[in-house]
Length: 386
Ligand code: HEM
Image (cartoon, rainbow, N blue to C red; front, side):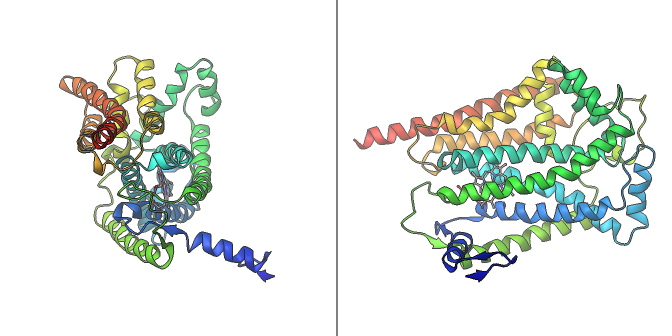
């Protein structure tokens, strides 16, 4: 019997099994830079939790005092400005990494190898969206208040939603009670994300990593340590470099200027918009001039990711590298995501309305076309071979 690192006892055989699973996890030898994003997400998640804890000890979740407490953090707390800038920049980096991580999964067909892993990823994305949105509310700037108004009002479209909204708000309107609830959820959910991320990695270890060629390389693997621990460390250096550059050189690059104005509950701003990482979804929400229709379309666009494993269930290979048509559709999908991000930041009037509708159509078309063209191309290749 040996004593494990936290004092619990285990047999040397068990220890070997854990050591093998964690460090000697067999990996394909050809994983490229896009396989660095997962470990970097863990790094940024850890940083967000630590900086968030430091911010929480000085933040006040009260309608009247929230803005002052944020100013206190920026001006009086030792290195408070640094901690807050890292937390703000970290949120942007986290979503940039998540989008690259999802893009990798779509391009190299990671969703085909292990469906449960993919579904756990979709859950992580939804939880991260909730945390990102709730965090935006806390500084209690103009966008915080009006953003919260727009998003929480969405629940009124489901039967009984008005009661749920009243319960969440702590009354008929948004008040200090609502801000307190937002803060509690923003504090708690990152720990839920951490737990689900661990399940995510356990699921990854169940069937192993896919690889850029999309082929079964299980008979030709290399241990995670030292090959990918060293590669992940290089990713950490670049990730931290990007975060420091963003947080200390352009701390307000991604924030809306209106966030520096105190809430005026009677004056609705001309354009209400979320942070850049939600703009694509916001553009889809506004593409239909009908409240319920827009909400359904937005949720469907997000959940459509979960349909990918079903649409490609007949596929034999995983990666798009063997399918030029799917590759082309993938490029259109990525470019359209950026286009929708631009559209989401505009006032919904004139040409931007139609732009949003076209972008929404292209998004949904690509999500369906990517797996289907892969399957069709593959069938063509196999039939030519026979
Ligand atoms: C908090 C957010 C997340 C964390 C911390 C995280 C972490 C990780 C880690 C460490 C890996 C292994 C290394 C790698 O392949 O990059 C991984 C793999 C994977 N993740 Fe995530 N992930 C997150 C979100 C997501 C999301 C949103 C999706 C998709 C919807 C997703 C889908 C996948 C897939 C399919 C793999 C397996 C890749 C392969 O087959 O090799 N993950 N994740």
